[in-house]
Length: 338
Image 1 (cartoon, rainbow, N blue to C red):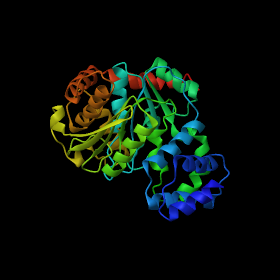
Image 2 (spheres, rainbow, N blue to C red):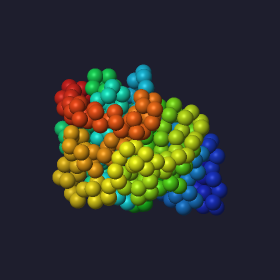
Image 3 (cartoon, rainbow, N blue to C red):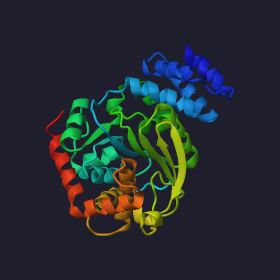
Image 4 (spheres, rainbow, N blue to C red):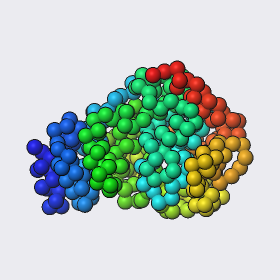
């Protein structure tokens, strides 16, 4: 089996070819690999350090095995890998509703909490939105509401063979960064938040290998997997196969700096409260950081020429109350589909 060959190479510090990693991943996804082999493979890969080529190979196989949402048109996903050291409230989820309120179609791919108190799935469920939808149900949400949520475990059933191994290992593995790279609706535009520059640069290279219309990979200098308002943000713009690194500050977007305490909830109730506050007409650091991600989304989609203009547009949309209307719309519509 290829997975045993792969483990042998990885333990010697040798990177796998694209073909080798896809074959080994197929063996994992189809249940041919044993739990011990999966554990050995994931651990050896982590110790060696995953190359962009290896991550791209695994993402390719995961995409092949995913339940697919068949939507014809441009889609945007705003997503974080999780695992950051800050644990802010659900910034990217809030920004998704701002984007949807503008008419941009959102295909949000997410899961339960990894680093924060609530993952996107936890939050949407708490709001009353049905998350266990079929591909057809998600497609309906995108078409009718402008935002569909794909609960990762339901859309990637083939990963079930690795799930118990990952839980027992208890360490971060390559699977922790594959989520944003395996959107079941094939969103061609993405804003991906990553907790450190090394991983961010790697994911940017992976997107260039896999292909994307336009995406940003971002990481805050404060350790947040978001475009941050507390510090500088390092970013990589990927257009097709071309990668352009850049950086930005809150001031570049016309916003004031805040502190970690302003955006880090102490408990679940505070997390939900911060989410709602970020989408209200009242100015606050919570609202500012959602404006920043929303402004980036508008810039990625080419709706605005730069993030400052994107932030101004996002502010108008939030102040109109439309994002909250979108939440209520999704709550009601999600109940009518399977």
